[in-house]
Amino acid sequence: AQSVTQLGSHVSVSEGALVLLRCNYSSSVPPYLFWYVQYPNQGLQLLLKYTTGATLVKGINGFEAEFKKSETSFHLTKPSAHMSDAAEYFCAVSDGNYQLIWGAGTKLIIKP
Amino acid sequence: SAVISQKPSRDICQRGTSLTIQCQVDSQVTMMFWYRQQPGQSLTLIATANQGSEATYESGFVIDKFPISRPNLTFSTLTVSNMSPEDSSIYLCSVLLGRTANYGYTFGSGTRLTVV
Image (cartoon, rainbow over all chains, first blue to last red; front, side, top):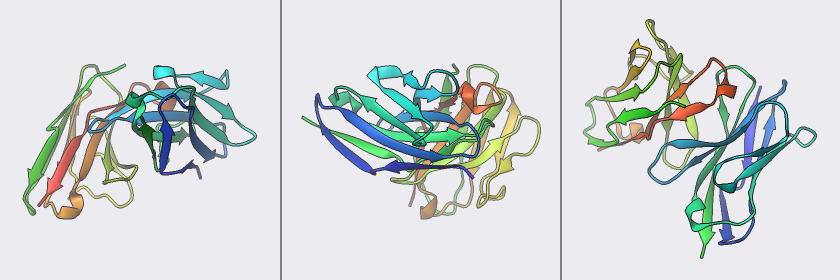
């Protein structure tokens, strides 16, 4: 069975600092991996996804993630945090059918 | 990508009553889903809304409590019936543009339900 683990329910970084949100997955087949962002009082927006091909995936708002099969990880990074990045971030995995398995979410807090 | 209009955006309801949430998509989509997001938690899939047939419910969710309609390829409703305070959550409509997850999901802005 597939599962997703997001390390840290809350991550706090200073404005301008590196953002690193961790996601590890388990899957018995090559996975499709996703990061979604949820801003306060809004729905979810797709940040980026990995399906096949290049393992370094670039998304919107300067975020990127690297699929590392050997580590079963898909960590989300951004070189320099902005105040507008404050939101909740969800990692999700699919085995290729239509269902997504969701992580518990990580709330990103940006300190001025 | 698709654009989803979800209504209402929020509501405060009395226990024992029902609320119907609407999800309108600007294009025809094969798959539509309803999720629940309880306070401070991740998303839980309630059901897949199937056009022209009964919805497919996930474990722990039943049709009597969460009846779903999908009359066509652009519209669906979710009703939360006989509400109790435990039903206070964000309810999200989602669509998949293809038949597999790699096509990507689009979400509505959600309905924030408070039951008093």
